[in-house]
Amino acid sequence: MNDPIAWDVAEKVATRVGGRDPFASSYHYRSLQPDFEELTAEAEELVAAATGLRSLSGPARARVTDRADWVRANIASFRRLMRPMTERLGARMGDSAFAPIGRVLTGVQVGSLLGWMSTRVLGQYDLLVIEDERPDEQDLVYYVGPNIIALEKRFAFPPREFRLWLALHEVTHRAQFTGVPWMRPYFLSLVESSVSAIDPDPRRLLDALRRAVDIVRDGRNPLSDGVLALLASTEQQQTLNQISGLMSLLEGHGDITMDRAGADRIPEAERFSRVLRQRRNQQRGPAKLLQQVIGLEAKLRQYEEGERFIEVVEAEPALVGVAGPAGAGGPGLLARVWEAPEFVPTVAEIRTPALWIARVRSLTVSGSPPSVD
Image (cartoon, rainbow, N blue to C red; front, side, top):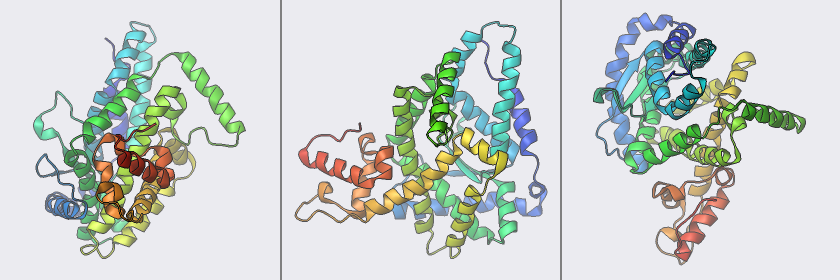
């Protein structure tokens, strides 16, 4: 079968687009790996104390990479994640005379996206297991060294404080996926379901364009949730909404934990947070369009909506006269999200937390298992 994406081209393009930051050869770079090994271990203890979540997969392993290495790691993850779709596309393309050209063009597009992202990302927990990779390449917490040093220099961040602050966010994500037994298979099942259901039929693209025109006429942005959401069928939209609700919860929880867990260790945490929020929202022109196309704008909203959801749920008082989890308020009520997939909030519940609070309480009190529409 012909792979519809020339992954070797994608890697070359991404490496070229990402470029080589001058800080990659700085003497400061040598301090990153030992610092992150130490600070990642410290972050794990702080996160466990703050959240009650502790990884069931052993200690986290930190790896400092340059942009090119980050690209290679993510291409491996992309290939694994997109396999259901690429197999069907490859079979449809067959031995078409245009297939080689299509493969290269798609490789250029994927490489351009990854190259741009490699200039922005600071850290990443890679939860995808690649079947043909070695065990020492699995379950890693990545830190993109040149980007981190560039920010430290630009804003005069104290390096050790800033690096611990970053480690807290990534280790929180690892605790979510390896400390909650059902989380990783549930998340991957949702993503694989959405990717597997993508229809490569050109008619689907025409339908999406018609919907985009209608959305524009209504005065809304057709790319606000990314291209995949625009191409999705009604059934896929439901899956994407589940993914979006889950990611809002995880991203918001990651940001809040980052600030809380290191409160006594990171005096400048508030400034770090403010600078990175501004950095997330400052894109203009082509970069702004690129964020819309790949759904990054939706991801940026997930941080804010997820944080607000958590704050509202934690502020909820306990029910008077009702004992146990059903009557719990505050952090005890929020802790229910880690019990089972059925407790994960929907997008509507993320945006209106009272809906989630009412659903979880009413269904639990009634003795029925909670369900998500």
